Amino acid sequence: DANSSLASLISKNSKIDAAIGELASGDEKKMKSAARKRGAYETQLSKPREYSGNGSILDYVKRSIITVLFGFLLAAVVAIPLGILCGLSKNFMTAVNPLIQTFRPVSPLAWVLITIQIVDGVFVGDKALNGELINNPFLHSAITVALCSLWATLSNTALGVSSVNADYMNVAKVLKLGWFDRIIKIVIPSAVPYIFTGLRITLGVGWMVLIVSEMMATSRGLGWYIDQQYQNNKVESLANIIVCIFIIGIIGAILDRVMFILHKSVSFNDDEVSA
Image 1 (cartoon, rainbow, N blue to C red):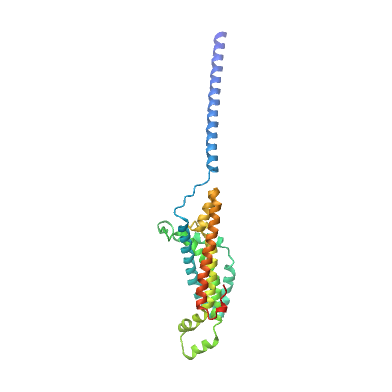
Image 2: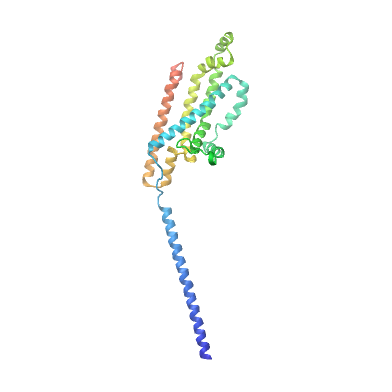
């Protein structure tokens, strides 16, 4: 009996030792597996992200120029009529001026977030714009450009309309011109130099705002390209960003020069236009 009890105890001890060995072996395998996964994850994090964009830098330049021109035209369509009304009516100007002073200093970062929410709320699901050019990110950037840049055109248009010579308006009354004819034949031609001053400033502001809006709205222009290069974390990324900065500056100078030439062509006095 003592021998059988001893044999049974030895057998139980051997089973316990075997179970402990299996548990230790299992834990060791789990630890090795976890270490392999952690190592792979750390390797993935430290690996630079490959640039996934399609097209060349010229494609992004073209995209940005189209976007800023679209936003510029949108700003002009909104700002010029409002500026004419503000210049013709002091009461209307008094009512609108607090809104102008309130919204003009708002950062483009705030406007682009609001624009994204509204555009994606209107064009959602099957209604989403998925064209190669006209799509939701394109509208995000273009509308943001318009919202941030229209104030200069609005203010200068109002100033130009309010500065129309009173003699011209008296002649219009003598000729019994209607309200619409006065605006088309007297007010707008007289205010054109002021309007183009505002448009020149609007285009410059719009081009600066565009880069920020493209970064936020993922519209595939120069701003998006710069953000992608920054995220790549490669040695050549800094060089690409610097090249983009020069491209942005050169394009901005060209756009300003074009507006300067147009402004000079409609100015009554060349001294009023400064380079």
